[in-house]
Length: 138
Length: 138
DNA sequence: TAATGAATGCAACCGTAGTGCATTTAATGT
DNA sequence: ACATTAAATGCACTACGGTTGCATTCATTA
Image (cartoon, rainbow over all chains, first blue to last red; front, side, top):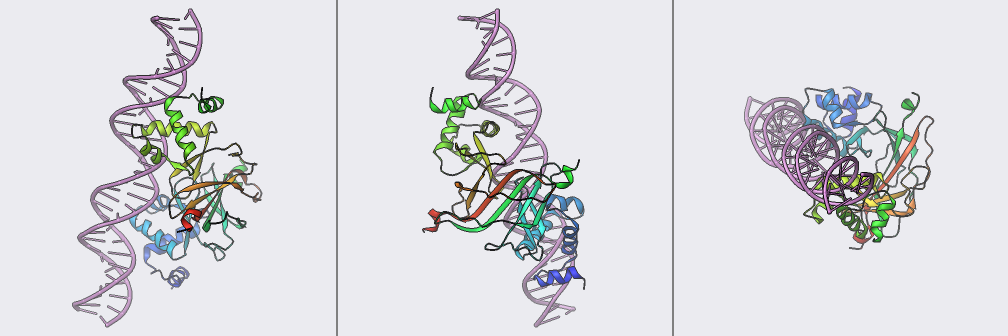
């Protein structure tokens, strides 16, 4: 059994062939991917399958969904320190308007925000848009 | 000439009847509105007109677009202190998952974030999801 | 090996975003 | 006041992401 299969089983996700492929794809990407990205990468794959696989991955804490302001949902593998829950130090995301890539800045945590009374926070999302390091060199 | 007409002209936007109506609608709302919201409010209005009006308003700094994670663009009037640009203290947004409303917390500014070298920030977006004060009372 | 449930494939549907073009409306100069 | 010109609006249509229902295949286990 490979590492990926173990990882999936640890998260109570049956390691099917398709899921392993999708996991691999996510793992080798250094930026967040949209459903369409995966669809294009695996021409034989069915949109619905990818869609539901990502949903499952998200529910089981394998990936986290990123809303980078493009109105297109992106996904990235959760790293060991990636706590996608409140009351944790959540990392922020950077969306490059030049190459259109979105990356997790896992080193950068979102500072705590004091809300007005009555407001209950359940999730925090911080996205910075601009030019990434690769694009700013050119 | 009314106040709204003056406001629009100050921003180099021709104060047409439709635009004044849309501005009024936005002004009396205490939460951000989606294109569809306006569409429903003015049954006679053409979606394209509303769409382009909001675009124009945004370009001219009359409204700011809000991405609250629902994948539906929302808009809210810019207040005098609402600087929708970088290097300013940007306010954050709160999206209530119960009543589905998104509000500007203009009193709450986004703290400055230090990015890794090479990254150039142009826009910052902070959205907190949870339960708003109205819904948390019930 | 049969039974069971999960995963996948297929075929749609819905809603938002966006564009091209014709038409109307408003502003300007003569 | 009228013609000219540009902006604003209305209409039709496309594109695409997200989503669901249902049939079918696959894998697990009794």
